Image 1 (cartoon, one colour):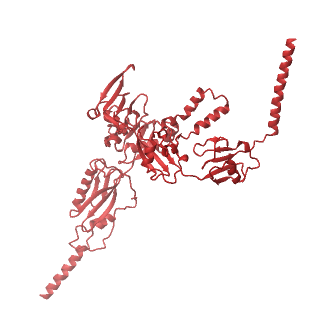
Image 2 (image 1 turned 60 degrees about the vertical axis):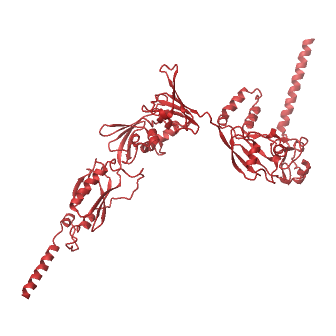
Image 3 (image 1 turned 90 degrees about the vertical axis):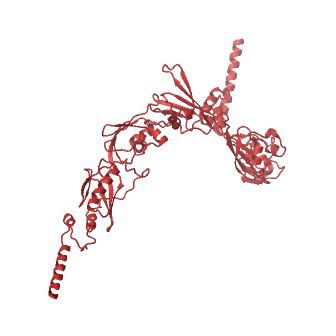
Length: 565
C-alpha cells in the first residue's frame, strides 16, 4: 500500500514539471525563453513582461509640445506617427510606447494589428482597450496619447511652400511662422516693405481659406477667433490641408471704427461682420463710451452721400455691417477728463497726485503733498509742462511751416537759431512761487494740466563759476556780493578771459544777463567767455573789404564829377 502511494506521488511530480516546462506561445512569437516557473495563480498575466519587453522604445524621444489645454477625445483625429502609451495594470504593471504606423495601425504582440488612424482619439482608445482586454481580461488597460505627430501641409497665396505642422497647431500659429518669424524670407520682405511710420500688414487675417483633403472649405477669421475664442474661426490642421493666405485689400475691403473705442482705425472687412464683431475689432468700448449712441455712416453706391444709421449696442449686436461702413461710437455726455501731476523736491509727501480737468490749481496740489518743508527755497522752484503729445508728434512739420511763414528767417544763421530755439523748449511755466506761497498772490496760482511736474527746490547756497577762470567750480553763496567776488574766489580771470562779456545765468529761467542788469543769487551761474583772437586771414579780409568799399566810393565820385562838367 505504501509503495503504491509513493509511485503515485512520483508520477504527479513528474507530470507537474512537464506542464511547467511547456513552451509559452509568446516566447515563440518573440524568440525568448522563459526563465521563471509560473504557478497556477499567476498564469493569466504571466507573459506580460515578455509582451512589453518585446516592443522596443529606442526610437521614442522625450519631447513636450505647447498645448492650449486638455486634448478633447471627440475632436482630435489620430494619424500616422502619433505616439501612444499602452498600459497594463494587474498582477504586473507595465507601460510601453506605441507609434501609429504609416499604414495607420498599432501592432501589439499577442493581440494583433488594430486600425486607429482617421478616427477620433476617443474611438481609437475604445478600439485598442477592447482588443487588449480580450487577451488580458483580468487587467486594467489604458491607451493614452503621449506625443502628437507632425505632418506637412501646403500653403499658397501671398506665400507658397510646404510647412511642418501638428494636429494641435492652429492656422494662426502657421501664419505667424510664415509672415512674422525673423528667419522667414516673406517676413523679412514685409518688414522692409513696411518700414514706415504706421505698420500695415500685407497679409489678410480675416479672409483665409483652409481646404480639407475631402474638399470641404473652412473660412478662417483670426480676428474673430481672438475676439470670441471660438475654434471654428481658427481650426487645427489635418493631413492633406491646403491653406490659402491672400493679400488684404484694405483700399477695397474695409470698415472703420472711431470714437470711444480702445483701438480706433481701419480694419479688414469680412462678409459675416456684425456690430458686435466691429466693436471687438477695435478692442471694445472706451471707459466713457455711450453704448446707446452708435452711428454708422453708410456710403451710397454712387459715392455722393451717406445713409446715417443710429444704433444702440445692447439691442443691435447682430446688426449686419457692410463693406466701407464708418462706425462712430459717441462719448458719454458727462465725460470728464482726469489727470495726474508729479510733485517733487522739498514737500512733505512727494509723489503723484490726481487733478480734475481745467480746475485743479498749483496751490491745491502743493497742499495735497503736505506743503513745503523748511528746506524749500521758493525762488528756485519750477513748474514744467509736457508738450501736447499730438502737437509734439508734428513738431518737424511745424518747424517747416513756421520757417516758411516767418518773415524774420532770412539768413542761414536765422534758420539755425530758430531750429535751436524750437528744439530747446523745456515747457517751463512762468510762476513766482514766492508770491504764490508767501504773499498768497492768486495771479500766480495757475491751473494745472495732465502730466505737469512741480519741483520745489532747495536753497543751493552756492554759485557756479566757469569758463575762462583759473579755478572753475562751486563758490559758497554770500548775500549781497557781486560777480567779481565769485570770480576772485574762483582764482580770478584767466589769461584769455574776455572780462567785458562776463554773464550771469539765472538758475531758474536760464536767462543770460550782463552784470549790471541783475544781482547774483543762490544757485546762479557766472560764465566768463574767452577772447576771440583774430587771425591774419581775418585781418586781411577786413582790410580788403574796407579798401574795396573806399575804391567803390572814389570811382563813383569821379564818375559823378565828370558827368557834371
